[in-house]
Image (tube, rainbow, N blue to C red; front, side, top):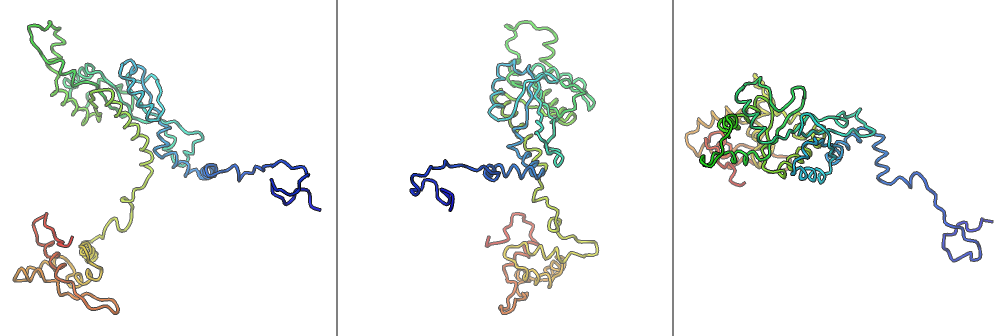
Length: 364
């Protein structure tokens, strides 16, 4: 006799009077592992796949930290920068930096880190530094650069022992220079000789000269912004670019694939490969089949031979129709055909015209 309830579904109307067994659930590994758990298990088995996942920009942005020097927060407009970093979704920390009033980017190493496959995942430090300068401090440095111009001139704002890719940002330089323009001298207060000398020697021409010096000799980019909003947009753009850098470096772009087609057809000094290169050039014309290109190359194995044949023609009409009657090898059962006057005209114009804007294909 079968046990009570065996083979009956829960909630069935049969078997009244018998004690109903409460439903039970069996928890197995297959039930707890949904698609996400299965994907996580697959990544655990394949460290390379997990490393590539961590390199993706949306993942890398969460592991990128922007370290902000506390001196930056003393400015009233720094709240705009902190709100922009918060909205971006990356981690930002308030930590003392060298030099002061600078930003630095660093990566948070994932735990556990499968960086034995791709070291870019666990890269702990980015070598990019953004230094914020007041307009007056920037102009003092510009004056030093002008006085000691040269490739070996030390940069006045950076410490030589900091091996970072250095960038400068100056907020409100244009407005500051305009405010220093000389006004009515009768109402102006007397100034010290140092201040008067600085106003005379440092202006926009000197600033532009210093920008060229910094870009060419010191490899330092200078960002001139008018507000903290503009600076915040720049910092967010740099943060996104740094998050995307490892992923882009790990990808092989299709247009750089090393293949036989990528290098074209080589032509050696003895002429080997010329016929193939000439055939491929004919094939680049619109509506030219391999059989038509074979007919042209068979009759004239090189461009030079075709040019010589064109020069031997007596009239323009004869030159345009030189290739028209060349027979084209037809497949089995197909009608015999020829190259035709359209392609003959296009090839002739291609080899002889001096107008770079000439439209060869009237049917395009």
